[in-house]
Length: 276
Ligand code: G3H
Ligand code: ZN
Image (cartoon, rainbow, N blue to C red):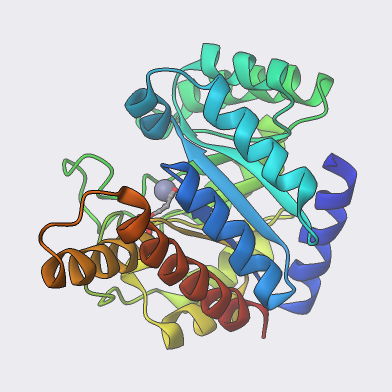
């Protein structure tokens, strides 16, 4: 799995194309993300964030369901733990068969980020698991961080060399949890980072970037595009439309199925935008 995805991401990097990485909170998200990938015929990354684990209270049941969906899929699906700050959760994920994680030590100062990330990389690589890290904190994770932060190319190259990470999340103008797709990315900075860093670059907070902005980011060198909020927008809009018409509805399947279909279609559409 690790080698297959290292090759796949390396190929996308060379071709200036990208893969979508979508966040799942519930099984309906996960089903829709896999169905959307199958509809488009493209690989996908299925992400479970530490926050989603906290929502469920435990990792194993949802992670096992996602891993099963991935192994049954007709396209490559990589299950990835996203924005993990708790190293115990990474170790639990390794035990469950997770082969890709983002260790997020971006709130720490540079030296501590390097030291903690390098230790996680050593443990993950021993267990056949890829590691993404973040440098230059992407804003909006808990509302306390300015979206103006940028990743420095020289520091990014030094960070990758010092830690051995397999991919790097960079701050280039996006911010988490945006609902209006108005973010403007610094494409020159993306290109400079791509030239300086020998591993795939990851864009977080991509719900705030419109289709043209996504295309520009991919052309400049982004390889993995993380999208969460956008899926929740389309899911909730679809659910709201059904409930608005049928106030007496009580069976969740009646409103979750249209929500799941809407997410599937948006995943398929976005994957196609990123792969061109
Ligand atoms: O790691 C997840 C992503 O960065 C999602 O961000 O919800 O703003 O699309 P978003
Ligand atoms: Zn993120």
